[in-house]
Image (cartoon, rainbow, N blue to C red; front, side):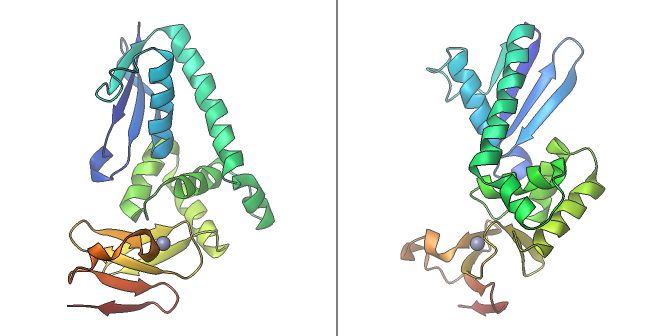
Length: 207
Ligand SMILES: [Zn+2]
């Protein structure tokens, strides 16, 4: 029993999960996963180790060497499944982009998350999934230029959107989040909110 899997909710105020695999004796971190994939992998491991009943509160588990090896193999299969499901390679190829690990991981995260991540969140993602931040910035730029994602700037905040087409957003000042207009109902009709058209870059305030 030497490996530990721990799931952090709202990792560094990102509103995303982070899963860490640590070697307990050596106290060294082997792998990290950020975002929806982290939550899914932990859920699968919880079922496998029969801790379904306590899964809601159980945010870490200790596993032996063999289970750790199985977990890594399953994590790799699950990752491949997601890459197919979210059409990552097809869309990168169709846009003549080089299939690097950085660009494919980044597009996968952006397509899997429910959020419009900030640049800070993408940095946290890069800390977990990438070795080189320079490659991450290059990958981000390439995705924007290929129009596979879009960058939205509002009041000194930068957000990234998996939907590259123009659509309206609501900016929540309090939580510093951006939400698609059609994903919320009218009860959110709050004077603090701002609508933003990504098409024209016009910001209308309703104060
Ligand atoms: Zn959007």
